[in-house]
Length: 395
Image 1 (cartoon, rainbow, N blue to C red):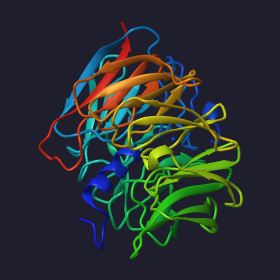
Image 2: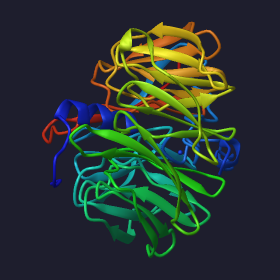
Image 3: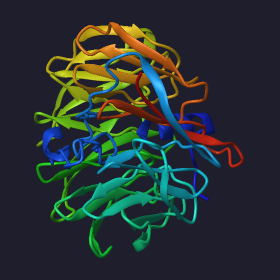
Image 4: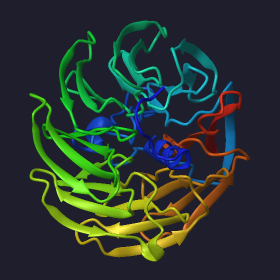
């Protein structure tokens, strides 16, 4: 499927799950007119900050519905106008009613999905393991167009200003016309874009790269969205599998050597870097809200770090995780453990608000929208294993 040398399977799986969305969350997450029900792309907005309108469940959480697929669901859902969109390893992209879980349609792709979908206008965009970016009609599930790359697309697309930006394992970051599927430009990053998804803010696209060498390392690359010209690059000691988050003129990204980097968004100059205690290493894409950066480390801690200084605010052990990323809404941080526990923590203190057991292996990060939390289950590379999409709400 993929040519050339690759990391160990366990390392790859961890990277895939964690990486699986306007300059501000408010501009991307607008009321649609039938309630909010809006989290239209991976990590909530084009800056990939992990923020959502929410709120999540305010009272005792209960299972509202569960939808079964024929294989794992390892991508984060996207939500708009009362419909949830999520891809599965069973090769289908599903559209489900957010209140009931009833299926509206399913679209059959050429392979399974590691790429979380993005919604813009009347189209939903998702990258497939077959190297294709699909554009599908949100109302009917009919294919509008497809764009083919040279390798699988595990990076999640973002749509800004009528252009889709997405990375491929072939090492290219692509800018594609959102209406027609026509390539506008392709930038060769000089490495592999595994599951890092581009963040697009103020005319720059930021994406993480794995450089395959005798001593694997990484790059964060900033690319002009109009021309495809590289503005700057920043080298890291470990590969970058996760997605960067951009907030208040700073890019936050963690590399696989266990370092969180804070960089000036315009120049790439380092502002600070920090490693977690006990050398656990970070295993998630960062979430940023209210001047705090939230990450999960590989020992199952949620760590809150001051966004301006890099100083640790608090740390809470919530359970072992395989890299699922935190989501933030209304002063609450939501995380999920590998074994299927969804945890809600106070964003300011780390105090436990509630936890909920779903009795399945976690496949995706939690997505928060209008009083509910949505989560996919299952592990990649298990073609015959079932998967589920869970909706958790108030009693």
